[in-house]
Length: 150
Image (cartoon, helix red, strand yellow):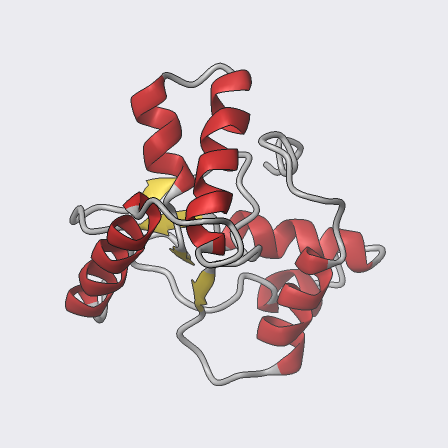
């Protein structure tokens, strides 16, 4: 993965800020992480798994891939509406990058809600911004928000 040192630095900063005991107004990241820990535990994850997943903030394509995952589906005309494009984008960019060397597949996560997404291609509307737009338009976060993704 490119820029691993920056991902490591960013991940360390997220973990440090999320640990601070501050009010939600002063530290919305910590408040969101605490809420997500509860959400993931309710979804059946252990405390440790829930804590780890709640701190995911950097997402991208699987190792060895790049782009937004939409070029093929658009060129083949294998989609019906924006929801199809949003689902493809979510599937493609749902690998969480942390300070560990290997990213993990983050099923059920909304990688674009208050997160950083690494799309290592020029910022083309149809591939990058279009995917983010479609993803953000999807329903509010829940641990199973992208469970339908293949």
